Image 1 (cartoon, rainbow, N blue to C red):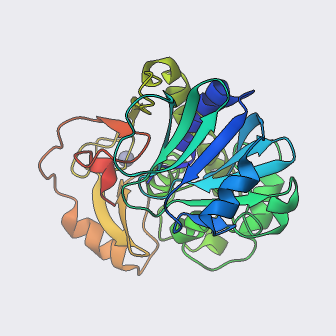
Image 2: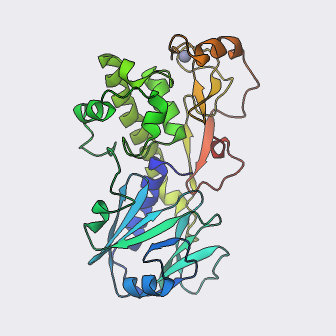
Length: 316
Ligand SMILES: [Zn+2]
């Protein structure tokens, strides 16, 4: 599933590709994706004649801003957008096509069909599901240390599931939570209310730097993945902990250990990220910290549309 940096990269690319284009006609063939309105004909008719003013993002949702209309779109597992010439053959699993007046088209393809699209009057989207309850936006200037501490509050939840909760902070998925916690040297099973001031500060900074460096990595290869066929390409991103089970920690050389926290595959350095006393992880990481087979490469290819099944990133 794409996380914030991948969605941000998709946003930047689409913003450069479709801003200024006017929708002549919309073909919508899969009602399941269309949430608001949920009738394909009404959905298509609402969009026709509108011009894209820009593509923005809230958490992992894309916001297509038009004159007098906003489309909120979530890619979920495998949704992907591409810009094509309108006369190019349509690939299977293409469910929504925005035909533009200039002879090009924005196509939405989704093999798993978990993606969603909602239409709103401008501003209305923030007062309604699915954007209404979203938490802090970590790359926005509103993401201050004070706001972060306030969002953590006095919660006693384990820090990893708390960071995955989109009502607390948006855009962090399994990969970047593991990365940020490793960078901040905090064990994922620590209760949020036991974090010290310096730990909260490190975590705050780690979230920002982990996400922004991933966005830069994606942003720097924007040109290479816009290849006319609408392929969303891939970028190289060096991972610290995620998917590196058995490989040495870049800080101390101790093998990275995988466990399950809150139902999610979780990667920690048992030395840099001290397990809370009495936790299962404390006992487990001691017995499981011997090296296992190295995975093929430290640098993992990350595909923006989440379709790279061979990638270790598609596992959780
Ligand atoms: Zn370490």
